[in-house]
Length: 139
Image (cartoon, rainbow, N blue to C red):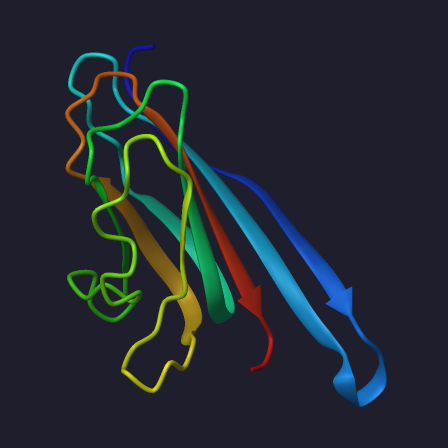
């Protein structure tokens, strides 16, 4: 495939509990494909709102380079990784999960705006992968 892609695959809200204990969780799935000649993956602008309580990364059938990195550029400064490095050094063969936190207080990261998702450190042409974010409306 000439070129490369990075696309939002699905966005699903789920409701848990009722009344005062009701919680909404959004599951955001993003699939990516590296360029077939340059191995690059374009950035994706994505709107995310809620507390990120978990992120799962899954290398695809054509695995990316070991220790590839995923960052979520903050809307105020795209050089700032809103996930504080939680998705750095991803494995080439294993599905992994991370619980992004900003400080040692273990508070989930609040996301509110349009972020720049980037995948870097890959040198494998046509590599594929999936990223799944779990967002909740309260913690």
